[in-house]
Image 1: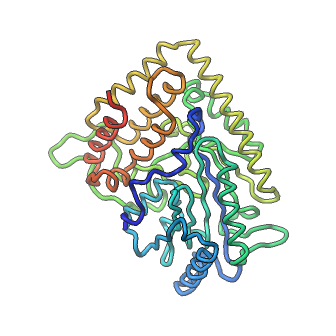
Image 2: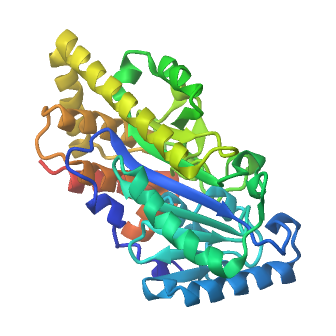
Amino acid sequence: MADDIQTAHLPDWIAATAPDQWIAVVSHCTLVRNLSDFAFPARCGEDERHAVEARVLDAFERINLFGSGRYLAAANLDTLAWQFLGERRIASREILQGMSNRGVYLAESQDFGIMVNGSDHLVLRALAGGMAVRDAWSRAGTVDDGLACLLGFAWQERLGFLTSRLGMVGTGLRASVLLHLPAIGLLGSVEDTAARIRHRGVELYGMTGGDFGATGTSLWSGEMAPPGLPPLTGAETPALQCLLTDLEGAVCTSPKNTLGNLYLLVNQETLGISEEEILFRVGHAAVEITQEEERSRALLMKRGALEIADRADRALAVARGARLLGLGEALDLLSALRMGGALGLVEGMTPQRLSQALLAAQAAHLVLGRGAASDARSLAIERAKLFHEAFPA
């Protein structure tokens, strides 16, 4: 159940974020692997998935993963706990939609996890605060090397690692950086930026909220407001009040439709390319986009510093005074505060503080971490209280 997850523990990647990392929020590396003597999970029977799970857990024991973490079996987790893991960016949409004999290994640091019997037999994910994709790769790659010696991964000499998703055959690696780009967004150039880097095998996506995407399955029930009360302005249904991930590192949308000025930069090529080249491409593009965002901020400050400062001050006032906050509005407030803090317009802001609020504002975090009821109104009330505490007058 949720008690097994240690919901009060902050992921170590937040504390490890450098104080100057205002633009890069978090880096991910996701590695997909399959056992060579089993079909992909979707084509396995229950007995086969059980055999895969048993073999994988034995390998975890042999490389001493249980010395610094634990395995959370699906049978012992309710849907709310699953969504919490998704909001922590450890469990992807694919594992949330999985079948029997699945689970997630969760490190005590909560910045590393291994999904078992989701879309593939194993999906390793490591997170690192800020622009630190190589740090995330080091963690994932080290564990991958240890498991490869024990499990016999599906690999073909011409293609590389075999995966259920054709677009990940080869290295099986998705390296990504979550970027905060409000100035590029305000100047209306984000789609031009995305087009400019696309030919390098990397893509810039927007982020959207929601739990199970195209399946239509929801973890939540409940109305927008109880009968007899007016609808909540700007409030989403509970099922939309989260930022989950897929194998890319986010549930993606068009850059022009993103939430909170957050964008995911991720490689799209895995076949015929090395892991080192993937890391170089993503890292180089992240630096380039960061520099563009810094130039865009300088331009905005030159054109209208008063307007930028006013935007940040208004966001702080709403954060301190709102009685109801939907997730979309909360993300917009955090965006304005993050930009204001980076430009020295709002005192007391740090990347760590804002990343913590970003996680805590999601639905399962509010329910499990703060005891909120799971209807939209209760979540909006509790989110407003969270912001009062996070940004006191």
